[in-house]
Image (cartoon, rainbow, N blue to C red; front, side, top):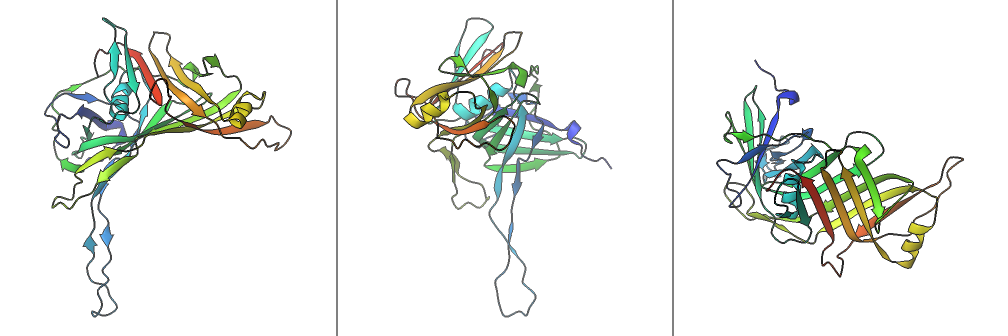
Length: 313
């Protein structure tokens, strides 16, 4: 009997025309490192009395389909997750390279279908009506650069065969921590130790009464872009900004020698006043848990720019 192994698992994604209706074709193979996306249905313990000390049979509760997908941040496939998180980008360029600009604040977020495959069982789980709740990643000096994508789905259907047809494959051109830079108002920030950032759509599940146990839809609420930046304490620039309550623009940027690039610009970032601690003889560090807000000039909170050879998302 075959046993499932993660090394043989595959994932395919396609955007939907109608929410909750899986497309018949147009799927793309998505690289990933792990996933918890799945459906679960807990049991409600019986509260009925009068049958002795042993409980009666439990009752099934509501079905929930959601989870996280950890993906490499690369020059092409990561654009699918950005499209799902921000909406269809504004693309410029008559020929490669193309620049895709993703803007926060859209009220219309595309839904998509994901199929995860374990062919040796075989088990093919299809999740329709998916939307991205949040995308987060960390910048550091070393290690593998990945993003965690939180997904909410309408429901799960499991089959013994795939239903996605021919899958388009993409070339994996991965960004690394070595390719990353952080700038403040266009000037590189020195002494940065680490950065955490999370973009959230704050999705609201429409949990109506249905016989199939699925939700009716998913609506976006107020978006949020938050994170933290840890620096070696070398000057008062960030502390002064925090004390004065001023905003700055922070850009988190990656570039490959072959020309591909990815940059997220938070246009109006506010910093809290941090506690400066001296914990020993080693260097002193300061951590700022920042929040981004809508820029009054641009009319949006952040912009993500992806440059690659793909013409359309």
